[in-house]
Length: 369
Image (cartoon, rainbow, N blue to C red; front, top):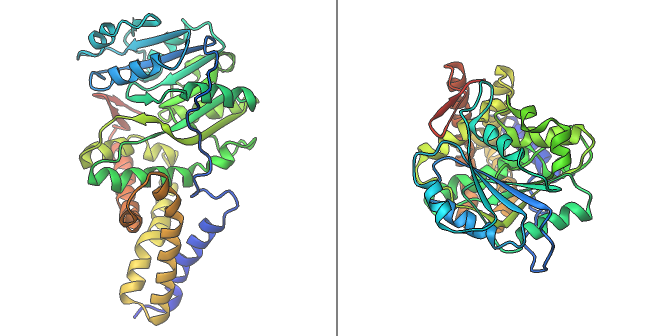
């Protein structure tokens, strides 16, 4: 039998996470649509799109119903499907479609598309919106009010991810949970420059703030461009805010493990700064957090078993807020350790891809470091 003290690191680690003053596991940072009417003529929308025929109709219809938005700029990133044909068929007066040029070395397709769209913006605010995001009526109004009332240069929403299939329910809530552990929203939303975070699917920012950092060119070497944007804004003295929402709905489907795996592996090793030391530290911590409790439960003494049960109670307790926020069955609480182990494997996959010269693969493109 394992001695009881081998179960102590698990318990101590989870007690620390549970008692952290910034409560990274909570869902208190949240913003949803409001019904009040606001003047949105000072807002332009940039939507980069590459082969988004399945979702672009929902996205454009929803944004066109937000109010008197100045202009909706759809940047076609060399789509080979019917994305542009569908967009043109909607007859939205404020919609302007531009064709993105081949992106130069050092740029990603998305950032290069956004930079070309930015050059056509003359309004005070820019809304960056992914082509698979549907905004409920009043969402842009809420974003604008948040920015103006709190004098924020950047407001971002973590989209409500699709959670329909078994794998989506297993891994998508856990994705949010681990993202909040890695980038605690309350610290990111403070004046502290230690942590800066944003969710690239839906970002409202001041145009002048983007100009001050030299546009999207300041991010061209970044794979995690949303968090890099927030960091650049904070470094110039700006204030940022990131929260959860039910009003920005992602229609991106992740029905098989491969699609989710690729999504995570695209940037996981980048988040560890391509450091083997941080990778090993991450592996060690996740082993203590999710694997050692099972070992102690199965092979430990009575004391070890008791400590493991308490540890699991804390693990599941910290997952309750996310579980409730997305209205999931209580069953999914108990799957967090499994999701944690899968994400560890994805992180190693990300590192291996990087070592093989394939740091990120997205939309049929390969991006190196």
